[in-house]
Length: 245
Ligand SMILES: NC(=O)c1ccc[n+]([C@@H]2O[C@H](COP(=O)([O-])OP(=O)(O)OC[C@H]3O[C@@H](n4cnc5c(N)ncnc54)[C@H](O)[C@@H]3O)[C@@H](O)[C@H]2O)c1
Image 1: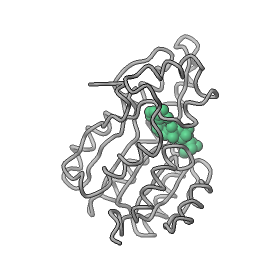
Image 2: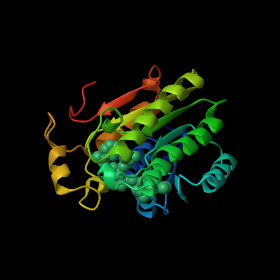
Image 3: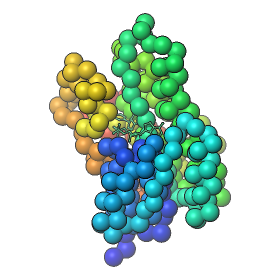
Image 4: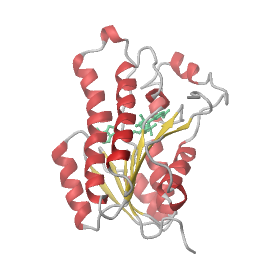
């Protein structure tokens, strides 16, 4: 049976995490060959893809380290290039401003912004002649502010800035969009990353539930496919109504 992404080559970062794993599985189930990257090799995601008859390979690198990123892209180029990027790697930090150290701020910016810059730049370099799709996972906090999350909010606002610039710079060959999720049930919302108080507040949205990673993956798959060919430079909300710009 003809699948929507047959013959396409995708890179998914953050592929060991909730949204990244769901995106990698979804793209692979639609026929894409999928390079799955995370700070450690995303073994479980790879095994699931192989179990469903998909094709995948694994990478381990820190998205904020240029040398490791370049090495991974050199390998990807040798293996046949890239048509789709779904960039999910990211970290969150709940911290009142007055107790936020410069180092803690820098780390969020390094992973969420510098990482997006490096991965996006190298993906576009590979796609600029053949064309392709860049899908960055930003956040509904890329549009709004939230007390005690200033580094994270700033990084996600900046990701939307990259989307708008790259969409213009590389049109019409490379379409560049962001997905801006509201609360999605993953490790990022677990007690280790978010206080119980904030987790509770996250539910104060019209649809009164967390989203699930598969709902985000369905949107990523749409943006990666032929039916979204007139969408570029956008931040698409998937958020239960948390933000209505
Ligand atoms: N879960 C939510 O509610 C939510 C809402 C809005 C946006 N997002 C965004 O979605 C993306 C995916 O988050 P998630 O919810 O799946 O969280 P997650 O914690 O489950 O996954 C994030 C993944 O990124 C990887 N990662 C972190 N730092 C890295 C680095 N330096 N190099 C390589 N990989 C690294 C982690 O190992 C992890 O597997 C993030 O960018 C996040 O900001 C999540």
